[in-house]
Length: 192
Image 1 (cartoon, rainbow, N blue to C red):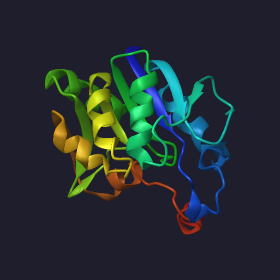
Image 2: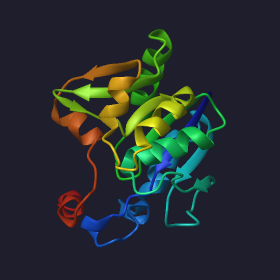
Image 3: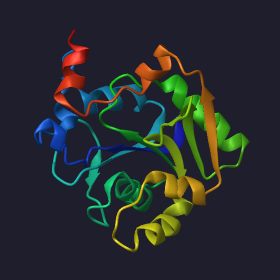
């Protein structure tokens, strides 16, 4: 078990899914939040959930809202960095049902080897910042980026931090690891 906080980002508005709580959508009969929790709970020393709407999920974790409201995923990362009890936060978006702990360990190895502030996977030209490791020391930097209350892409933080990328093959297997559910079509595609 690593001294790492798993922060499950479950706070999106889910507008493209009609406002339903993505965390509770079941894939193969298991709610998304449970899939992520079960995959990583034995690898980390703390689990927290960042959510602006739900006060309870069927997992053992404290729930925290965004501190800086309406700033998208970077606002969720800021809340995670603020509330984590460890120096390293493993951020995972709740809508990725097929992530695995082998990838987590690869990220962790690179994080410590490179003495990084952020490590995220990269495949082809795609970055996966919602499956990454972040140092809690970045909290003031994130707060500063969000201080204009405009919301910012996560790449604003990646560009301002000591960020390293875990290069992965750009193939079907990798794309499935990071498959995320944003629309009813994404969900229906899994049921085919």
